[in-house]
Length: 472
Image: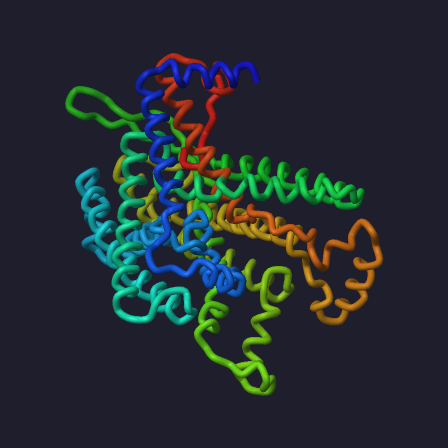
């Protein structure tokens, strides 16, 4: 602890590092201030009533990444979601569009060009999304009908998105850490006081079982955070050797190195994709009218089905896990091309000891990546499910054949009665939030430590130690 406090003091002893940290904190404060500026023409009371009905839909996922701004329709309501979507689209397009692939390989100039395209696409996506948001607000009585509210909302929210994108880029260039990730981080962390207050209210009631439940929940979250740190730092080091070659009168090469392959190379994106896909039917149903007095109509039956289809339902969780595994393999296939990696190794005179260059190297890397991706997918599914089951429960009664007996067993057992219904908390941190928080914190602390070590200061864990972020 003493070394950690000394490292914190050293952070502010370095003028350049101190300036970067204060600059980052200042822009994060500006971002949080914007969350309290509501878009014009919003009926806040009606919005609160509507949000109670749609909080579990795709709009809830959007609200998570906007830091609660969408729930109040502030000027930053869309947050960084249009920018993230544009980045993912362009990343996927590099696989099918050769011109973008060529730009990606041109180094810094190509990267700047792709960033420019990302900004243009962000504006286009923001305009489309804000038009749907404005129509949705009008349909639910939150905004005034007519073109005036529609145009004003589109201009306000799109401008807010552009400003948030600019804040993120400024933090990345002149501050510490990845700006877009830190903005998401700040939006999630802001809900921590509410979660802590809720836990204290439960403990203050004097119920012994409630207190034990809180302690179990806190211990589980601490263990889960430690597990995330361990897995995000996991690497599979593939040995690489470079053959000696003559360049003029000099002989270069001959060194030994490693290619670190991360266990979780896809980050939190598969969980986001899976959550969005599962939330999409409920979102679409918000726009499908149905007669509650006619339960036999197909509209009512579909509504009743998806009302039970949510977190805690066994069939929902099964599809959720399957989608996470699918999107993990899909995303890794896009971002890590084993044939391209093996070809680059061969061109630069590198090879894996005992493996022939070229096709055999590609097959060897593909075998390793398949195993790592499967482990990473199971890890993401586990982290996403554990908090959800603890807080929302697992409806064992819906299981075929044994559901009734299991439900009776858990309900009759005092220490396990929470399993079918959950612990009764609406805690702010789910598995997706924890993955984002821990990953961004690791990246930022690793960058700060690198700055300290570069200036001959001790890092957070003393000399000889090196804290690695998930990107390192």
